[in-house]
Image (cartoon, rainbow, N blue to C red; front, side, top):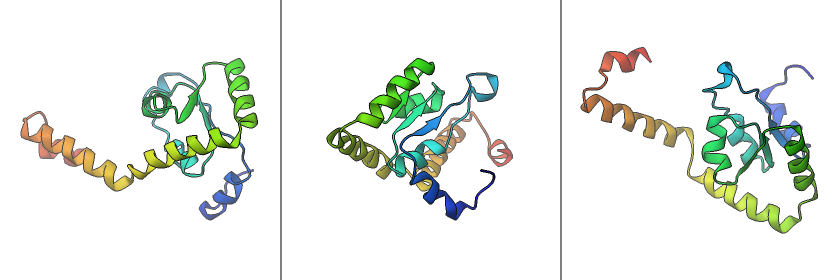
Length: 133
């Protein structure tokens, strides 16, 4: 489909039944943190992902994202999501919305700055190292 304008993305995701994060598990993806996870949850789409560390925790552990290890598990989870009754989906969406209400770039930045300030006060890093990041 090629590149799309950011404003066109909601119309694409609106037509999806399931969102996928099918990253290969290798050295290149070992420390990846897909921001798409939050975007898919915000769109109200059930998410199926390979076990990427930052997706497993917290999303997989909180039952917000299905974590799969192979094609058979993907098929099983996809069939479940495509046949799920509305009551179960509503409960899942409520959990996802509650999780999302406690996260934002501002909240993430505040937490990161708190960690950096704590490390600086402990003498484990200095301001030059923070600026370099």
